[in-house]
Length: 187
Image 1 (spheres, helix red, strand yellow):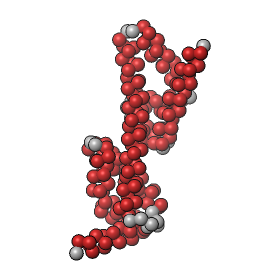
Image 2: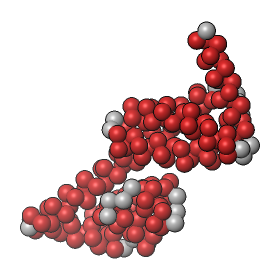
Image 3: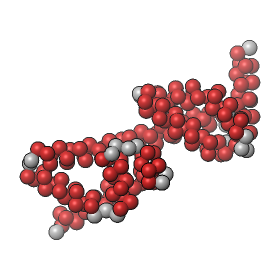
Image 4: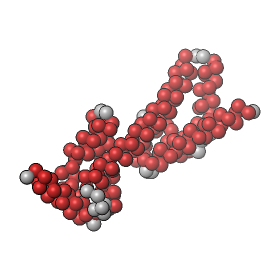
């Protein structure tokens, strides 16, 4: 009996997902209601804490409105949904790791400057000068993410760009700082 119920539920999910993929908002809303618990539970497992899981689940739900158009019914809806959540979780973990490393470096330089160590103050001044030499869009992104501690999504909203563009810009900043450091060592 339980197997039959599961099969009926799966078929209903596939019908709803295909309708949603074709623009049926009511079907999309019903899918979210039926599966939000699954989205949140997986998000919680991936992220390890409730606040980050809530953010990830919200991001998944918002992105699902766009992603559902790619659902073709080739896999069960729940399988497809798990892939969406897993990919979003992996992206979030990469952003978190990247942001954490850059933030630690930024905080360390600022702490060293405050400590009064002359050599370290020079390093901090170098970093400030290097950041000042960046193009405005890159510098603004660094300020919002590292100084103001906005998430990539929040910074993207402020700047009117996608979260992925914020991540790309921070990657470009790291590359530019490495290049400048290499140039300064050879001069």
